[in-house]
Every structure is written in structure tokens, then in C-alpha cells.
Length: 303
Image (tube, rainbow, N blue to C red):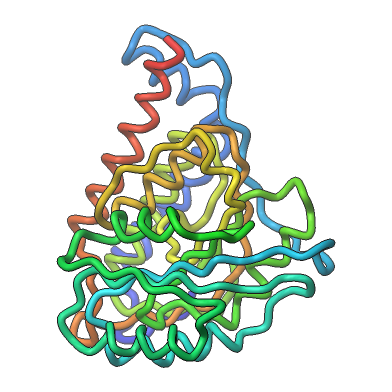
């Protein structure tokens, strides 16, 4: 992780150290201590623990042809959307993979829709546009996109240029192994990610540690904006979050249903609030609550 801006304060170092300790504790003890702790809350023990997540080892080209649906929800991204779409359309994919684009306009009031319409016009066989008359939130936009996506693999791509399409090949390569069903891109596994707001970095570390503590997983970057999964993993899963809590809901549902989350290092270039960053601290607090609610929901189901 590369930090831009000021020197790190001693207190900041202490907090990061504490979060690392929390994550380590979650990794070692979550499979035994946490289920019992949660069981005490509901006077019941969970029947089967979720298997731990693993880091992906990128392998050779996948066998057979697979279609990747790149779903991009956007809201007032007139400046970044054309650049993003150009990069996403030309980014290398593993051999045997092709792509389609599902663009979801979540009530934009600038020229974003015109950019998307032009892209679909130039790529009629591989792109489609869904338009909402008002802003409903990322989760609602993602559900609309998932409803029409045809791909074997779903890839979530935000329109803000924080996540680089050049990492598609790295993110998708693990699917060469039929046993791999979910791959997340992690900002913390490499040294090509940048941080502007320290409290956002700390919040991400806390969300990851919280996820590992609750579900016995080993992920390093739960709030990553670069998530991918085989379409089939959504069978039997109901997603209902309308806003940015879609991401923790998706992660929790995947872990709750026993899917292993693999991770690969990806690049990350955050933007500032002035540049249009939309996620706020309250979204992090909501994510903590969503993760806990889904974990407790699983405990009640097994009671």
C-alpha cells in the first residue's frame, strides 16, 4: 500500500497494528471461538462452519470458451466513463474468454447516458444499456444488470477509474481451475495501490477483519470494488441491498453458502471527494451491520 499525502502518525501505526492483530486472531480462532460466541447469543450452535477463503494462484489459460459479463453501474460519471469503457473494451483477457458489457445508468443527470448510448451504438453485439429514471443505488443497479447478464462469469467494474481494467487478465486467470468460483481483487496483496484518506484505509482493514471474524474467512480486502464470480454461485442467493451495502451483502452471502473467495493483487488509484468519490463513512458502518446481520441470520437458520 502506497500512501500519498502526510507522514503516518504514531497513533495511526498503532491502529494498523491493532487491526493486523485482529485479522490474525480472526484467522486462527474464528472457526472455533466465534461460532460458539454467536451460538451463545442465540443459544444454538451452527451445524457447519463456512470453509476458509484462500488466495488465488493464477494458472494457465482456461479450457473452453467463457463469456465474461462486465457490469458497470454509473451515476454522473461523464468525465471518467468514456475512458473506462475504452480501457475495458481493449484490456487483455485470458485465452478463450470473450466479454460483454452491461451498463446501468442509475439516474445520471450529466452526459453519462449519452456516453453509454454511443458506446452501445458502436458495440451493438456486445453491449447493452439499462437506464433508471432516478437514482436507486448501486445495489439496485447491480440487480438490474445481473438480471440481463448472459456471461458465465460476472465482473463488477465501477465507472470511476479507481480500478484498472488492465487487471482483468490477472483477476480472471484463476477460473482456469473449475473449482474456483469467486475471485476478488485485493489492494493489500501487492504494492501498486494508493491511499489518500487514511480513515478509509483503516475502515477497509476493519471490514476485512470483521468479515474474517464472523465467517472464518481469510480475505484481505472485503470492500474491494473489483469482484468477480461464476454466475452459478448466485443460485439460491437473494440479494436485496439497494446501496453500497450491496458489496458486503454479496460477500456475506457467498461465504454463508460455502463458497471459497480467492484473491489476486490489483492496482488501485483512489479519487478525492472533489473528483466525485461517493462512498461515505456511514456506508462503512452500514457494511459492518450487514455482515453481522447475515451471520446471525445463518445462526438462527441452523438453530
